Amino acid sequence: FTTVAHPTGMSAPAGSELCSSLGFDPKGFTEEVLGILHQASESAEGKTPMPVHVAKVLFCDGEIAPRAAMMTNVVSVAYLQSSLWGAVTEAEGKPDEERQQQMSSLLTSAKANRPNFGPHDLSDLLLGSATLPTLADLYNRAGLTEEVMKEVGTRCLARARRSAARREASGRPITLEP
Image: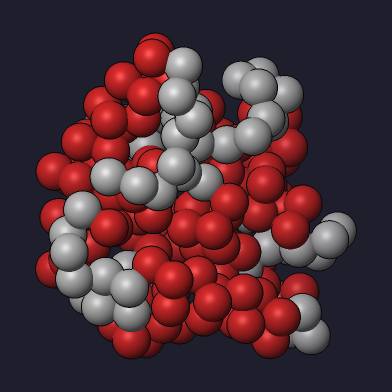
């Protein structure tokens, strides 16, 4: 089971290319993270994506992150998703230099969560995104504080994956319903 729409393998080259262009070794990230970066690149329509594009992929396009956030009972996922769509629209006019700097900050933050371990996974990406000022403000307004994000990135993420796997195995569609 994966949180991205692209089959494993198809998304890795594009996500790897983004990592390499920003000076990061793609082998330092899981296939899942590379797929998310690929989707964020597509969302940015040919420009370097920004962290808000990654957050949109995580919380608007994926199933696992919003489900994990809902499990905290404090996050307004609908508000978060609406805010992310607005932020993506605002990001359209940002210069490429700013885009690259912000994406480098996101990947650096993701790697900082477990600096001696790798490859870095979805949990690292979620936790890293919560430390960026641009996303932290947006997350906080939806109830997704850094402390809550730690819960989402650890305990709730694992529960959401298990729940989605059970739904998938039973043939039921994966929804945001608990």
